[in-house]
Image 1 (cartoon, rainbow, N blue to C red):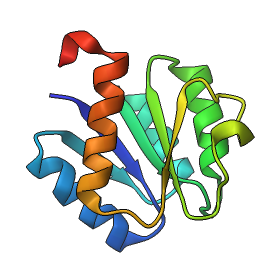
Image 2 (image 1 turned 90 degrees about the vertical axis):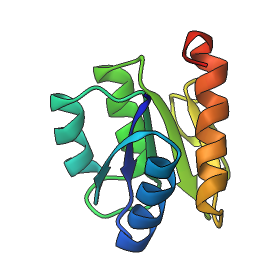
Image 3 (image 1 turned 60 degrees about the vertical axis):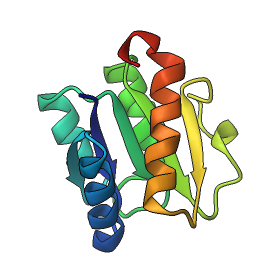
Image 4 (image 1 turned 180 degrees about the vertical axis):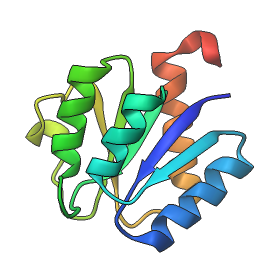
Length: 123
């Protein structure tokens, strides 16, 4: 069962994504910002971190860079209605963009595709 971390400062988005991913068979944790996500990443392993870009205390880009240094095997997806793409982050080869707005099941499908591409044995 893939384990994902959802990072977003909007509780409603975290809750909707938590429900969608849980119903789809994922093990899910959530964090309200990048600092909280860092703490979780230090104590747990995640297959995918799905993060908003614009958050207080730490941007999604900064979180992706940090994850790349701490655990390069963790896949990352940035969610944003403002970001032009992951070319803005140094980890462009490891970072996918999920443009907002999206339906929760669209996020589940996107993460499933990313996992299938990167981790074919898990399919």
